[in-house]
Image (tube, rainbow, N blue to C red; front, side, top):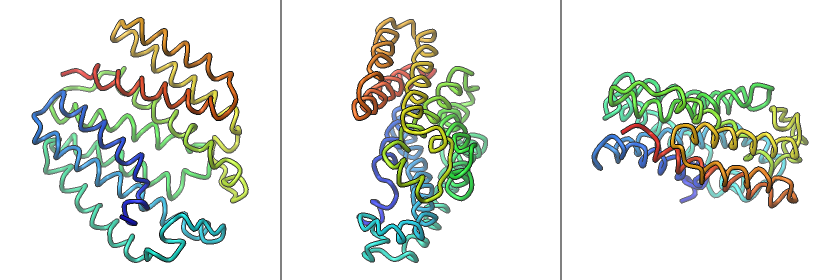
Length: 256
């Protein structure tokens, strides 16, 4: 259980669930579960490498809520688990339902997430791996079915990824800045990061509106933007609600 906690379990499970629902649009349950397992292993690699890279800083700041910092989980255990997950995601991606091309695109997304942990996290291009990884996920699933991913799907995936990056950093903004982490959200600050995340999600909502012609989506997206004028803790909730709305619509709209 400590290993799973170190993997950033909430986002890992969310991305896995979305990939499973996307796969169900194109495959039967069996292949869809294999695709979800591949995505789960990939998310474990990204999550574990994130905590391994952050370990020295986490120890310095005494972040005892993290298992490796409080001594209940060894660094070697996480390193071994990461290698197992890496071998698993490689095999499941290349030899599973996504096929060679779809599998390679999925591994591109995983590699982009790992690159964020090791390099992009502390520079102005910190948003780039999120854009690549979130676009690669739906693309890999459609390519596995010999369907060229439509441009709107790639744009929406990338937009959701960058929005998630800005929204996710807000809660640790002050601590990250004190630690010298200077990604784009840390540079622009909490307030602007919240607005950027909200505007990106609204842009995705508009894009999906032209695909689905759902006026409800347009109305809810507009309401979500209006909620960004609320105090910070409520703005973050508004951003997350918009993200959930866009993800659900993205899953339903993916070509079957």
